[in-house]
Length: 277
Image (cartoon, rainbow, N blue to C red; front, top):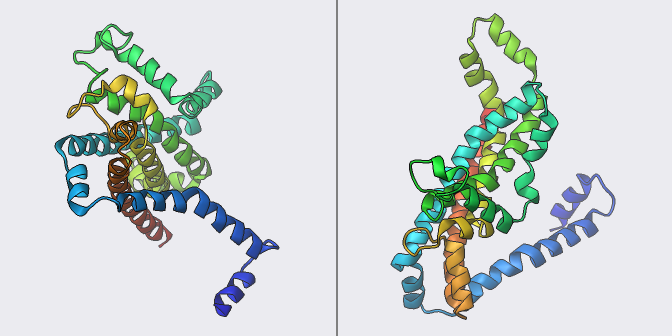
């Protein structure tokens, strides 16, 4: 204990490190640890049989499949197109560039319910976009995917954009002088540098999509076994005063999400270590 305190003080830059650390831990406990502990403590009021029946019912499993599947697919699409948007904003000059750059942050500022209503109006069968599509989007699982893609794009763009701005163009010029094509330069010079930031943006978009509720419920249709997301099931159980059942579903979702994010962070750490070499 004494050794750890000595090391902390030795590597402290700002004065009052112990006080700042105490406030940080207290804030972390009040905002994160205590609420999460309450979820698991409430879940423990159920017997194992009741817990298992709750979290493995057909309706709940279908909601898991839809929530995690669409969240992962939306984050994957955002990783590709978020990189493209960030590349265009950093590398090219064009009219209204600042306006488009500001529009990227629109999902941050727009209330989720407003976003859901707007997306539903656009992608309904009589909407501006939906009327031209050969398949239905609104009130289908495809609508969930559209909503999650909309709210997750800024996380990738804003994570990758600063790294692109700091990327040295001399490296690309050196690769070109050595005879590398544009594709080879991107694959072997640019992409390895961007990969840690891209994985971070992917993880942020994925985590944001898992807990999204407001923008999804308007466009999803909320049909059980078809387009019903897990957060909606939790809200439904809370409205039915089934608090233990709601926390049981939330606990399973939390454990799965934490495991996936941990795996993504491990891959990200491996990419940074490989880049450092």
